[in-house]
Length: 228
Length: 267
Image (cartoon, rainbow over all chains, first blue to last red; front, side, top):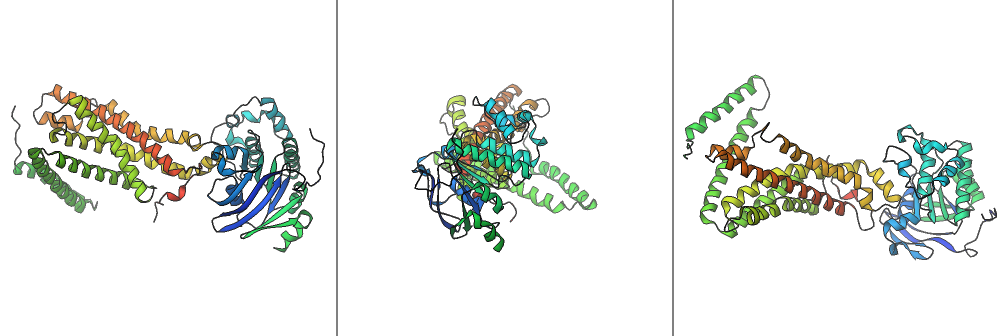
């Protein structure tokens, strides 16, 4: 375990984990930004501006021009499934295709880990045995995060990960993601409409416009959001 | 054995049944009388025409003409398969895909039957080649268009699940595996069912025709068994290749779902 140091790391201090260069998709962009190893960057912007599409472009699910690099290596150098296992997006709405929760978790000897993680997010350790149809929206949301972490991605793209959670469980989720990136050095991009949340989880916040990104410091994000 | 030749008068008696049916359609205001008349005339014309074409073809026995006829039949079948799909792959690639599947299901299987099984000489003898190809095209078409229709429809409706699986790092093959095998089953179930019912519930049309035409029943049955095997194999391989090729078209090299190549059914 690393010492609990929430100091905002500058890009020059640590290695750049995720680099996005001149990314354009649909009629949007160019978008350029970088996230250091272990850093979390917030992403805000009005509804419909294309935040989810930006994350989908980074994970290479929609065609885009420009470059996305992981530790200096371009996405085009990876087979797409390998890229998405490393640069993993958790969409706002999760989908499930088997009947039970557990069937979606391919066991990698991490059974003990899973029940620990379930508890950390305020979920019943028995949740793996549950039927998908029984789950609440909030339970699905937290389970979808755990499902996405199975392959220990180096970049985590979170699209409104706590939209269905109450304050208590939102806090648990924020702590959980913080511990994950501190333990693994993963870079996190966190999309949220809640400026207070972005202030809590991210040292830097980017504001998305259709023509590019503007960096706003986290402490000002609240006023910026209100001005819209 | 002598076949009782049908005179025009005999056919006219059968046709009068349809005239009576049209009268009933009017009485019951079903509104089908025009269609009944129109399509029975059309069917008569089409079959008479093909009868003339076949007579000429059988007399000439030329390879070129047989191939020309076969190509026309294949194109028509490909078009039909394509037209039957609701949410089809748009443009020339969608048609080519249907055509390719029909080629696998019918052309290859017919060629195999002619050369290896029936061993006619020459292999393109039109009396064998054309009816066999026709039987295969007509009977494998349903399964193949069912499977392809279901594939595009399900990919569209379950795009959320498919993209979720892609997002978790699955390849397109993995992400669509369950869906693809379900579509292949959908395409193959009808022929499997009709094998089960053959002879018990239904007397297959070809066999009936042969028996009426004077062939001894056991010979007719043997040909029918051959045809059933060929249809089942043709449908199966046609469905498998149709689904596989659909997958190649509907996902790109970066394992992205390309729903934009589908044509919306309501336009």
